[in-house]
Image 1 (cartoon, rainbow, N blue to C red):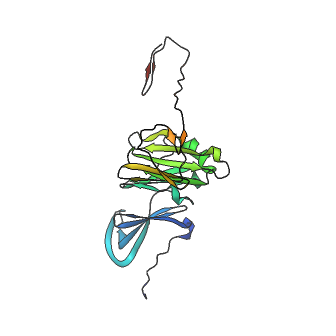
Image 2 (image 1 turned 180 degrees about the vertical axis):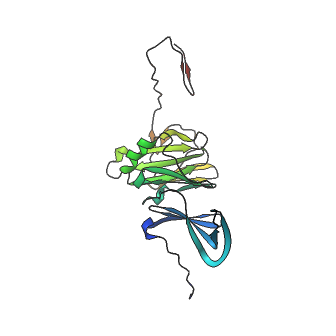
Image 3 (image 1 turned 90 degrees about the horizontal axis):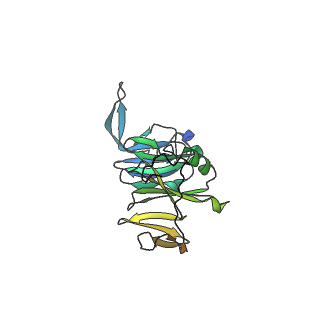
Length: 229
C-alpha cells in the first residue's frame, strides 16, 4: 500500500471514458486522446525513434499516445471490439475510428464524411456493436430530442466502406457464437431468423430505386448491375 500504484494521465486529454485490454497492454480512451499503457514494462526510445521495451515493477507502466488527435468524446457506448480491431466514434470531431495494429484510422472519410459530420453533431447516444455473422460494425446514432432522426449504418471490412443502412434502432447489440443479438425495450432479439425485414415486431418493406440518365444509346455500367437500353 505504500507504493505508488496509480497512474496520472494528462488532464488536457479529458476524462477517461473507456478501458480495454489489448494483449499485455491497456488501451485508454479519453475524450480527446487514445493512449496505450504498458503493463509491467516501459518503453525506452532510442535517438532514431525506435523503442526498446524494458521491465518495470509498476503494474501500470508508461503511457504511449497513439498518433492522431482523436478520442471517444463522451460516448463509450459506441465502442465495439472484434479480434484485434476496435471501433468507436468521436462525436466532437464528427469521426468514426478504428484502432488496430496499424494504429488509429478514420472510417468516416470513406465516402461518409459529410454524413457523420452532420449526424454526430446532433447525436445524443451512439450505440456501437459488431455483427460477427455479417462481419460489420453497426453504429446506431440516436437523438433523444428528435427520435425520427435516428439511424443505423454499417461498416464492412471486406469492402472498406459503408454498404448498409439498417431499419432497426437497438438499445444495445452483441454477438455470441456467430449469432447477432440486439436489445429493444429490455427484450433480446436474434437476427438469424427466417422472417425478413421484421424488426422488433414491425414489418418493413424493401425497395430498390434505379436512377439512369436519359441517353438510351449509352451503355450504363455499374458496380453490381449492368443495364443497357
